[in-house]
Amino acid sequence: MSFPTKRYFRADHNPLPAGEVTAFSLDCASVEQWNESGSADNVMWDGDTPRFKTTTEKRDDLLPGADSQQNRITDAAILAGFEWASVTFPLTLENQNNFSQLYALSKDELIVYPKKVWSGLSSTELDDAQEVKEFYLTGIAHVEACLDAGFAQKQAVRNMNYNTLNKWMSDNSSI
Image 1 (cartoon, rainbow, N blue to C red):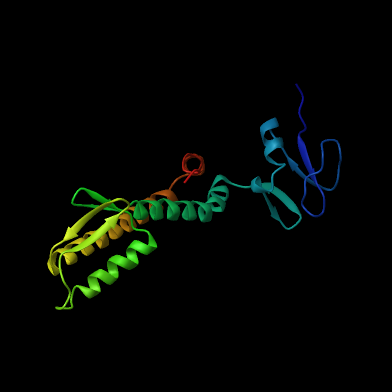
Image 2 (image 1 turned 120 degrees about the vertical axis):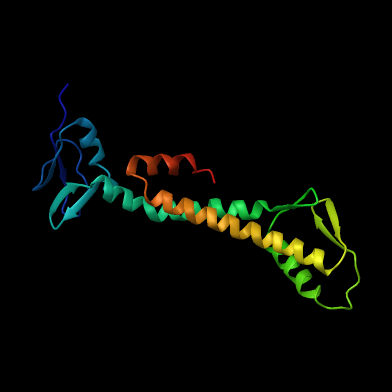
């Protein structure tokens, strides 16, 4: 089976349909290359000369999206929350604010204990200022651990080759 050996482009860098010819062309060694050349994601222009992007250039194009994707994964891990007294406390913005305020108030000697903290329909009681502090610092440690893991994963993602990165993004696209 024969395939077009050149992809032709308009002056605005948009590909022409098969059979149309202009001065702007890109040699294609296979039908796969010809198909790839129809996408701006795969073609780089050096002035008026099109060329296929290298896999490094294609990988670099994916990195901003990969960073955003890893940030969403990290955010989801933080929001999943931490466990205290067999109860999981999601770290929604509201809970983060409430827990921070409870911790700030725990330094006031006039506060009456125990203090009940809720997670959905479950709750636990914090018996004194020290327990409030431990509860709060457990939440902070959870956030720090998620951020550390997210940053390490982001560094690993940035070091992936194009095919591995493309697969990683596809595997994590639902997050």
